[in-house]
Image (cartoon, rainbow, N blue to C red; front, side, top):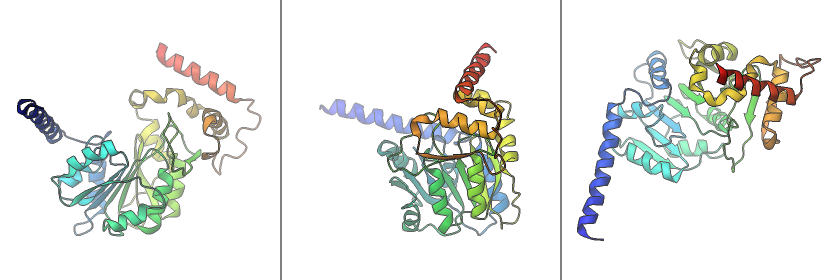
Length: 310
């Protein structure tokens, strides 16, 4: 390679890095749907001065785009971002390189290793913020974290398509590969996991739920149904933002037991890889309905056609 070509390549890479820096510096927010501002609100309300300013981002991606924690790290918070993708972790390291108090960790986080990883990175038991978004067996990772740590604020992605009281949890599978609509957990399952660990849902913002320990002064718990309605179902722009969810919209018209039958049919290729039930208060809802998985599919197709015509 000639010196001229090498110099040109270097200048192109430099320009690319400068462009990324300019874009990052000019952005008002880094999160997808305003989660960053909601985190600021709860940090102000629930984390008084002198408490931990440590953030953990599990599923950190490139560290900037769609990040719930990047703004905190820029403001001087310490912490770590975990990312399993070799491609993304290079960008993650670049995003964090100016923040010596923040580490980029290239590893796949599992329920078995998450607590050891947090300990290895000197994360205190009652740290400030946990952001969890790994699009897979998130339930089991959060369960493991809350068994040994007590983050003050948690923001975690839910499978927003599945309404309460339906319980849905993807089983732990180290070889998991996300496919369309099959990932994570429903808000009802999250609510029960949170309650078991003494946490409360305090807000939902589209496909992210916010949790906090019930013992913190100022925590205002919401039940799963109310949080889901306010944060997702009744948002006027929901269907525009989540157009890919149209083939699951029928779930909002079905009884819990009918929804379970529909989902079992929808997730037929994943049989044995998830837990699903209608919820404790929904027993017998499908009795005498006369509905079949085939009829649910027909209704879903019609719903999509109506939306397209509208």
